[in-house]
Length: 352
Image (cartoon, rainbow, N blue to C red; front, side, top):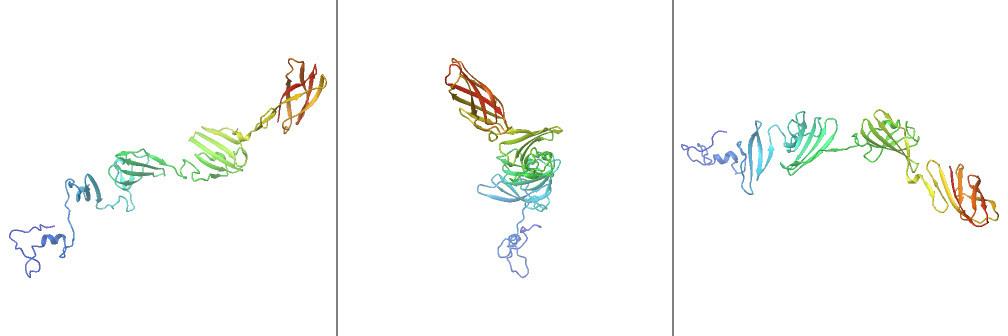
């Protein structure tokens, strides 16, 4: 723009003169229309940011990489408002800005592509950074690797928090995160990523050939743990592990629900494997020095009894007991008593 200042050799003439230029209103009319309304304002580049007073703000322009950029300053805070060739938010036009600097310094809101030269990325791979800027000391960044990993962190009072990875259903971090286990119909060996699976009864390497739930914990490609719980079987689960190149055999494990018992003077204990242990205490008064007595077990052995041992509180009297025979439901004791008198028989039986 040419020099608009009024020169010493010009006449001071107002608007509307038939032959002479309006000098009285010329400077005002550069920035306003004839009705006094603003028309435009030209801001010359400043070599340094101006210093506004208390309760003041200032608009100014300054050079940034050869571009004349518009800034606003109030107090000590400076906000970059516009730059030629750049939208208000970096990357808002659909193309992320190619960035090779320090992500710790990236606090201006916008979309960026962090290239190989960019530092303080959450991973070594290049990716896309979305920045929400509040001030030079408060901001948030979300980083998406080009191959899909997503991370986030925040700037609090000038200090960045550590990058934290966001786990999604599609991530290899945790399958079934949405609340429904991923269905596997082919082979339990395919379930090698952390998460929850619904294992089909027909799937290969299913320990029970029954539908159930599979939990997988993966340390790395060489070490994996699987825990399987049948859908309809209570008290039992199965566990195995993968080490370097091979799966171990499934090991059957049990919870308290898999055991049944009845504790008392006479009682029993049934293990998940089918082993049954029974015991009893019977008070008895024989009528002869030697006679037999049939004693029923607290429960019938499902298949049969395999051993019985018994004793009496014979001392100081001469009393004893022997096992004559046994079945799934009872055993026959031969009681010796001399002299004849009451005795207590204690027995222990094992079967399945």
